[in-house]
Length: 235
Image (cartoon, helix red, strand yellow):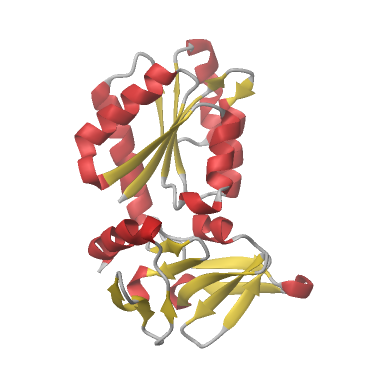
């Protein structure tokens, strides 16, 4: 499943895009509307909001510069693909500074909308993140192969990354920030846990998730459906 966020200060535009995309792609996507740069950035930073794949972003958001916001997103969340849109032709000349997947002009052509979203989906599906670099306690830097990650767990204000090598690496980072750097098969199962779908041994609503290591991690009611769908997609 792809997680899409639409950000435009014109509510009629956001609702139109949401309804159009959900009608076209049905259960293939989840779509969320936000209406300001502040709300968008808060959404991305919020521990409970899960994994965002694609953002459709207006470049004129009141007093905020959507192109600058897109650059910030590219810097902080490189795995998220951004589609920019605008009704002002004079603003379009600078959009490619933000390296968007696509630029849509208003009024929005549905076929171009679908083409842009499908292009972003294709990039998300095929992008391969092989390793992440995290800062540990005492300033130590760790380079961790994504294929080695079993699950991540919130520990006080930091995060422990459990690997299939038996390591538990403490990272000075929020769980949400780490999940946003990782492929979409590493997904939140709980407010305090995220797991590698490819490393699951068994899964049930009653017993939670058993990893191939034998470790058992919880699945909250909020995240149960998302985990179930992710397993169906990746296994």
